[in-house]
Amino acid sequence: MIFRENEKLKNEIISQVIENSRGLWTLAKCVKYAIPAAIIIAVIYACLFLFVPDLGVVIVAGAAKKEIVPIISRTVLILIFGIVLYFCCGFMLANRTSKDLTERTEEELAIADGVIRYIFRTRYVTSPDNRVVVVIPLRDITSVNYNNKTRRIELIGRISSDVVEKYNPAHQYNPNKGNLKDLVIYDYFTPSLVDCLHSRGLI
Image (cartoon, rainbow, N blue to C red; front, side, top):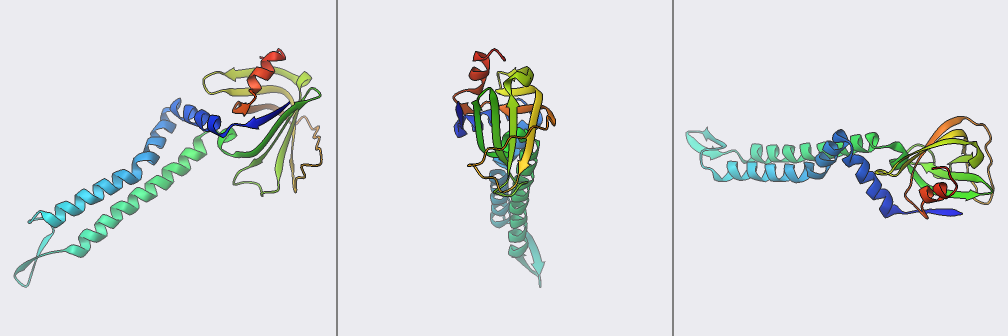
C-alpha cells in the first residue's frame, strides 16, 4: 500500500499544532501582523510629523523649519524593525513547531510485506540527493500512541533508520540497525495511515 502526502492536510495539521500551543500561537500572530503593524505605525508617525504644525519643527536662522530628513529616516527605521521582527518570529516559529512536521520533505511512505517503509529528506540539513530511510516491521511495533486532534502518531518498538547519500529510488535500502525506539509521523497521507494501522489492530 502506497501513501501519498496531502499538502493541504499537512498545512491544516501545522495550524492545529500551533493553535494548541500558546507560545507558538503568539509567535504566529507576530509573524502575521508584524509588517502590517509596522506600516500603519510608520504612516501615522509620518503623517503626524508632516501635517501637525508644531511637530518636527526646528528654528534655523530665526525661521521655523520642518525637519524632513529625520522624519523619513525614523519612518524607514520603523518599517525595518517590522521586517526584522517578521523574520525573527518566523524563524522561531519554524524552529519551535514540531520538526517532524516542518523539516521533512519529499516524503515516501508505503506498507508492503508487513513492513513500513518511510523515506524523506530533511529540509535545510541534508543535500537534495540525500534521504533518511526508515524501516519498521509491523511485528516489531510494541505500542502506538495517537493524538486525534493533531493526528500525531508515535510508533514505539524496534525501528531502523539510516541516512542514504545519493539516494537512488530504483534501489531498495534495508537498514536493520534497530537504532530507534520510537518514531513520530503525522497522518497527512492519503489513504490514512491511522486507518491502515487501525485495520491491522495496532491502534
